[in-house]
Image (cartoon, one colour):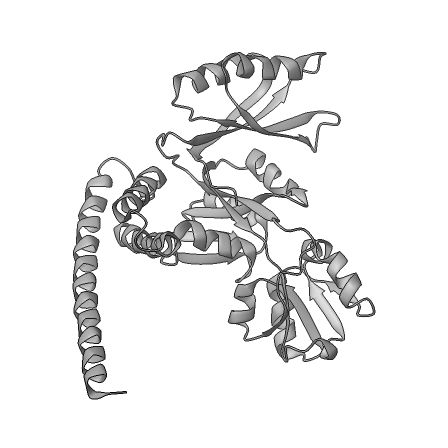
Length: 362
């Protein structure tokens, strides 16, 4: 490299250093303003999370950018900036279905950023319990998978515990096969969660038909086992491979492309309307002909889109069913409120679970 080229490179790097100094200074100023906003918000609300406002900030940043800086990178950067500023207003504890590196952990990080304190919990019921008792500020639980269907324990929790749904997040589920060596010929056993094994069944039969599989309680436990036994391979998340220092033998071995899980964020205070919202209800219908039709008719008449309806047997009342329902719109929207009031008349039981900005399906 010629001297003039070296000199030019040094000059450019000095510009980068100067810009970085300016950026850090502005971030420090932004943090101080965020703390002041937090003080004002505490006068009328104990909740630092304002999903609607955070969405507005992100859309504003993308509008300012006009596509010049790569948008995916900008979203990641600003999501973490927002997370750090929110946590400076009021540090948050987030409970999730653990252990670490599970897809629920990844979904929690996607929604909240990496600044809060994440608490892995043993099961879905415990996540609900910790939120209800306010030992955690929020909880994250899986609701449904595009391949495996609805998670029954989450529906039970929505019925059994006094919490609100304050957000949702969609996460693409990509399963990697990993072990210590990164070599397929070293694998004698394959461990994973039952759902992960089911979602990768076809790939395993084609590529490792003679290798036995074993179910464990989580993909993270499988990865921890693989980290100490060279003959074990785990089917787990990419984050698990990084965390437990494993080598990826094969990436994305799930049988169906587009496999996605929808997670619910649990809390106590629902966000204000954003313009693109979803409202969740839990209800039980009268046991008579046409009751389900009478539920759907008012929604159709008012042009309210029904995005999900799922039945669940009531455990202690044979042949009685609860229905989990999602509709588009916010409970504060007049047409939605009127629609919910109309269907309430035909229900023996109806609970508004929450209204929140719609997540973006993958």
